[in-house]
Length: 75
Image 1 (cartoon, rainbow, N blue to C red):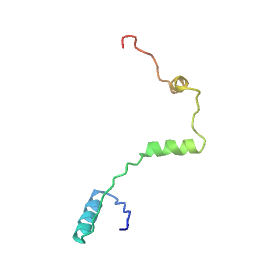
Image 2: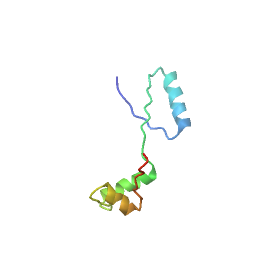
Image 3: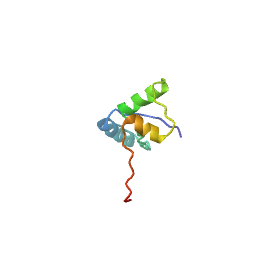
Image 4: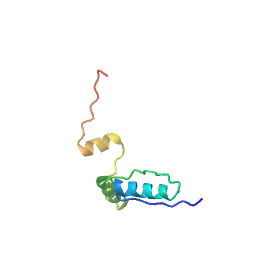
């Protein structure tokens, strides 16, 4: 059995391909692979090109990002 990878552009195209393959008696298994959004792709490209920010630990990272890292004593 051979495997063919087809990436439909939208749900309508996916439905059309599924119907077509079933009419041709082709056993098709759809696999939905998640892909990162635009912001994530941009961040990955920035890090790969050396534009990322390095810190010694998580506390330094939170400080650099301006995130208050207070711990609630009541927990």
